[in-house]
Picture 1 (spheres, each protein chain N blue to C red):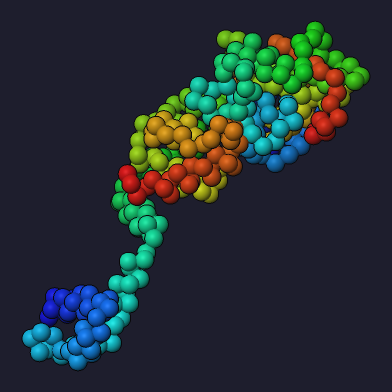
Picture 2: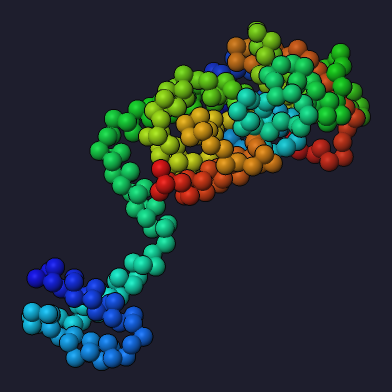
Length: 151
Length: 175
């Protein structure tokens, strides 16, 4: 998908610096990408199609998403700013409070997102807010993992 | 004449399998004629016998492929269904391209209409996933009531696609 087409979907990207970092694929989604997994789609759907961590409720709620990331060592935090030694994720919710998207922090100003079935992009914090993903409601962090090198 | 020849071939085939050598000798003497004394082309009979042998060993897979081809043929006679499927698929793919929620993806109205197409959609979906993996699992599960994907493969699109294609190969002939 071209930048122009992506901006049609996410108009808030128009005035920011972002770039496409991968080819499009359906093999993983934003949650998986945020965790560093490029081989599965994570989602707590009712029909058990998506991967979801064992012992975390398969519910499309913020609580279930927080618990899913807690299984990976994340805890909720108040600030999205970069903290040395930590990696952060941001959970987007729509107007009804349902989780829609998760981004992962790369460095002080930069975040990475897998856009659904499309490409991964590198973007500014909160640059994907809008009608599709809603906006960031929760940020979580964990100590930097050695194995977490995918960008 | 054709019926007589087939009867003869079957009779020869039965006797050919018998361990009784007397039968074989008798066969050799009578091979050139039908019961009514009509002459038959022996090379054609041998070819037919070989074909019968091969047919007995044909794997069920061949029958499945045949069944699939017949279903494809029946679909080709209903181009409006194929066209409808592709129109709905394109609409669904465009509208849900940026979505990560598998629920949102599956609840899209075009996707739900594809599910509503029932068995016809299965054949078209199988054609699709053979070419390009996609989020068709919700539809496949909903239409068939089956889930060939083992729990440890959940979310892994390549593995899930493979599991469904295997399921399809095993079940399409039985439906």
